[in-house]
Image 1: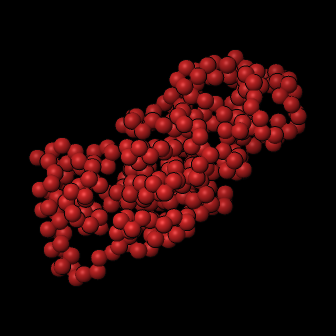
Image 2: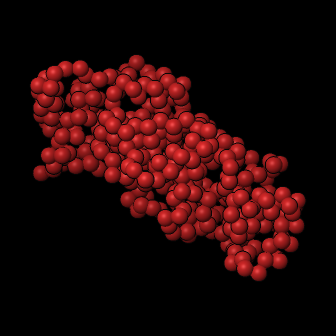
Image 3: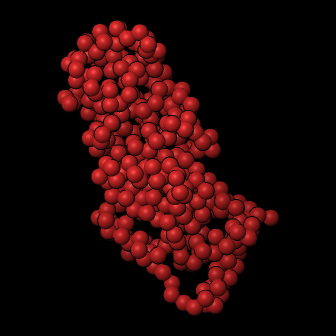
Length: 336
């Protein structure tokens, strides 16, 4: 495919065809027609299409009004890694810094009903990778996705791929994480059939996908399947996420943690009684350091002097005892 920018008329034709046929047929039609002028003739002959040039003009205008950008596959801004997957989107619509698409990207995805440990691990891994120069991509869903995308609060850019139009925030509670990319038309509401489409883009953008606490038949496993079919690396985090096996993730994506961060992957070896005693002490320390005002977990670890391991286990117990609650942005607070 020749890489070049389209003028307004060409983009209108390209977008009209993209909204009329699916990705596979799109490129078949494009090859058969040989030029966008011939594509326009093809579109004019269709009697069953409900999206024409005028609709394309309106979509382009609506996107421009909110600062979004519609990027066809032939545009230089379209990521090469996504362009080379089977059935790549003929167009993607972006909102935010398009240059992120040309950087090294790692996907972190997982279950909506994830544990606190899993969410903390996702956030910490996303932060470590971001500080190493990677851009995190996820799906803006609840649970693991939100934890991964939340590195934006640490001033690290992130990409969120959604199953809705660029102007539709879903879920609504993630409005503040609203930096995203989509292939769907403007104002499209989320539907179940759009999520697999989104998932293939998440894996398509990244050479590696980390799956954390995905339940059986979940969308995360669909993403993992896409990743395998696309020749990507897939890392599964199914159990307790802080054991030494997860050095493999870092090693496989050729990333060395700074010395002060390596404690994340250390496992404490002690008897059950010793561990329980340490947990009880850690819980007391944590309760002494927090109140009803949400505090960042990383700041809590720093202020308390506790290890990451013991802090996360203590927080999990406190959450199960209904003594603390979690807030957006990887924060926790006491329940009075």
